[in-house]
Picture 1 (tube, rainbow, N blue to C red):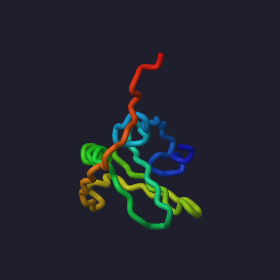
Picture 2 (cartoon, rainbow, N blue to C red):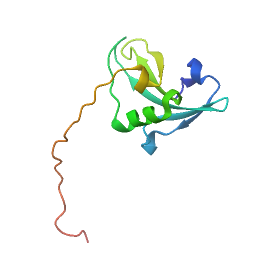
Picture 3 (cartoon, rainbow, N blue to C red):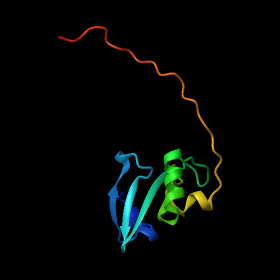
Length: 113
């Protein structure tokens, strides 16, 4: 959040935090009447892979060039930023379905009084 203005695409923009909304992106950034949806992903090294949730991928398909992945590369040393517009079009992804493992919960037997 503190460094978005150092990214050329977002320079002088107004940032709105959307992480708690669960809408498939982390931030909305308004730059000169253009609204970008930005999803931030981190990679520990200078190169690597990242994954997108189904919700994130669907938003990328819907918003195309207005959806931008911002990668924070080299997290272990000296972080740098890489932005990728329209990641659903400009990158190749493979869909993988994950089956959740069973969830164990403990339910109280009687009311607390």
